[in-house]
Picture 1 (cartoon, rainbow, N blue to C red):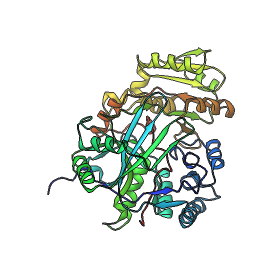
Picture 2: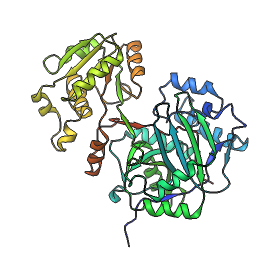
Picture 3: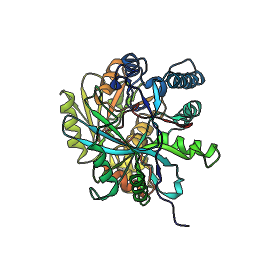
Length: 420
């Protein structure tokens, strides 16, 4: 039997009825792990009573109550017509556009959940077991994929059947168009033409995908597929596939907030291990300094006391002693590797648990929360996409939350209910 490749299937999308909500923008959200709780969660909840965060991040006293609440909310919204199913299965062309001229287009569909040994969907980060368990409980309760994860592949640029289908769809009137408060314009089209669906299916069968965003959701898909009989709806999961040869993604860093470590203590512990320089400059200037230092080696910015502290030039003997040697050089020299293996584990002795470390995508929000809470913000410089892909192909995972690919798909534009 010939080896199986990526299998992307059409589905009947579940979408908000624009006549039943204040606006499509008001019911969308960033992916669940980007929402900075509780500030961002409450802001989104107040934007519209039907905002998608009430499904992806329900609030109740216990995990069981949260998941039951999400399931009941989804059931009620469907019965009330707030969410309605499209009449026929299709793939969905999705476009994101910002004010700087950046355009990203991809295809949303149901991807067959493959096994790791098939090497079809490549992770580049480890996952946290408690988050996978949390997402699995929510998906079981709702019997739904509430938001697509983001996968990338390397096509041949513009001369492919998939890219031609995407461009043709983008010339038509969209199913929906909205602009979210971050300034991004979103448009969605449905593709139901059998010939087009077949062309995409055949082309993707020869591709390998990299998980750009959604490692925990992919691990959740794999867990739920193993729990349920096959063939069945749990054999597939909702994804957005983007050809980065045609539409390169942006790669940004994910920052750390150390809850229980004041900046003064963090800096004092670095004495003799790293060079530390205080920067009395705005955030933009500090990030420029970080970029310059990162071009020459490992570098970080510490914040939370009203200033920035540029940390670089680690003691080679220290890193040689603390960084594992059973991985490629490209992995051993990653900033995230040195941060976790050397700084967190050895110098600061901070366990990687939610009680001690928060992972935040927004740079300014990380600094503000550190200043407000008396903790330390560790600001990171992004990794280049080629490094991520090369390590993933070698089967080497990066330290978790090492990168943030984007733009990420907005949650709430199209959902997948397993009973459709």
